[in-house]
Image 1 (cartoon, rainbow, N blue to C red):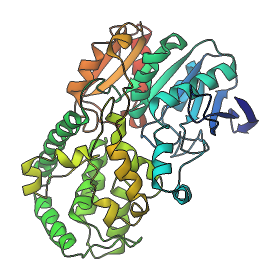
Image 2 (image 1 turned 180 degrees about the vertical axis):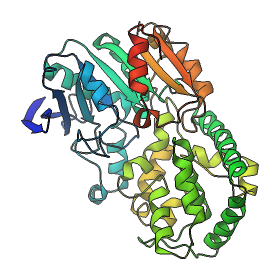
Image 3 (image 1 turned 135 degrees about the vertical axis):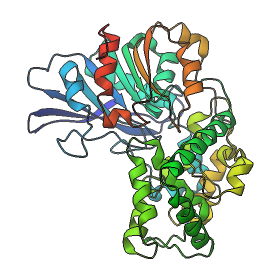
Image 4 (image 1 turned 180 degrees about the horizontal axis):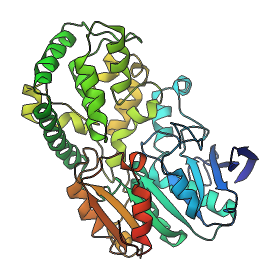
Length: 418
């Protein structure tokens, strides 16, 4: 491992130490000489230079860490984190400044790119974390895992639990042993409930959605990037219902004139998958694959009522047809097809997690449409030292929209939630 660059910046009242390390693409195989860069920013405030470290693992997979600005794009929990820790914002491999994956990689051919992507999983991210921790000279540190970052934390507890002080998990207690089909089938149930709840509040929008589906079927919704929106893509805008205020996004869409520029632009931004980071689309189902091939799990497990009633919204349910119908995904078609057939190695070990002695706290959201409550509670039973906060106050994005981290730190430190 070689340190490529370390730079210190001062952003208003924050000190940001930027570290770029070169690490193996394939950990544990000395015969494979390929390397990638991994970027991490260590953020502190005056007086907090000697606080312990907290590494943040972002949701996704395929999204870089947020940047530490005091703005609408800054993490809402930044101040709370900096009151207790030096915050390590890691760009997970393949994202941000950690050798990002993009359209330019496709020149290597689909098989080569698919093989490359198999080395970007949570277990490899854990090895990158360990390299950064050792580089910073920390014997241990704590971790905050949001969504997929929580999945990665479970992988951390499988292989390197001794490196962790407290673990904080928000909407990220994944199943550790169930098949992806089980997860996506249950997520359809969650989206059915969320859809019906929405239409009970705004019953007139069901007819509005039917009209939009008819328009999409006729090829009448064309986005600014040229995508002719299919009904399955249109329905995926319902993914917004998985966030605290996402119903407002959906409401605004269904109130707009579908022939207007505003509708087309807003729909393009409301759908959960786009061309900004193709890794999120091509790699997404793998996040639930521990010892399985996914084979388009979300598509295969679609219930009959979802096929019959196009007004039911979908969430993070990927469709194979998008590799043909979405211009941004079409170049990734062959890569996605290869990954769907790949037999992903087992990444979690329930017995090891249960024996990890992990301490900390986890938020589980009752109405989570992405990481189902039922499977989260199964996994929570493996972590008796991690205090559990089961709440219907927030949706999946609770960390970004409320004082969730404050509550978790209070729980972990034995203070009551007020």
